[in-house]
Amino acid sequence: MTTPRAERVVTESRAVDSRLLLAKFKSKQCNTSIIMCYAPTNYAPEDEYYEELQSVIHEIPERDMKIVIGDFNAEIGKINHGIENAMGVDGLGEVAYENGAHFISFCSANNLVIGSTLFQHKDIHKYTWISLCGNYENQRDHIPLNKERRRTKKYEQL
Image (tube, rainbow, N blue to C red):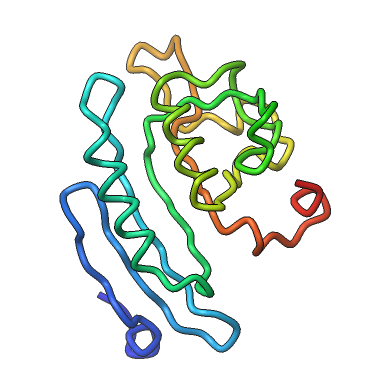
């Protein structure tokens, strides 16, 4: 359900599978491809998911702006030694757990940077997940995008 004007800029919209959706938009500056994701948890097999996500990334023309949005179930922390090309230092938590390490590796391999780690915010504003009991919070939803499309001074330093 969109407006006629919005329909003119959408060039493709499709569900890849139950966890991935691809939408492509045209514009005067550059075309944009957005991938919506819902990654498996640490307890589910993730290899097939990242293989499918990788195949969708390969479909997108190199010159297009790539934005990947979703629940990656990935705790990535803020330590970025050796992975500065994929993330900044303003993540939440200290270390990347299994899903987080896999996610960072995927971003690095595809020249994507995790936008939520590039800007300083209070930790309370970074939470994207809170446990049902309310005792645990974390940042599991992320938005990686093309590293070469950065615009802010802090982003450009990476």
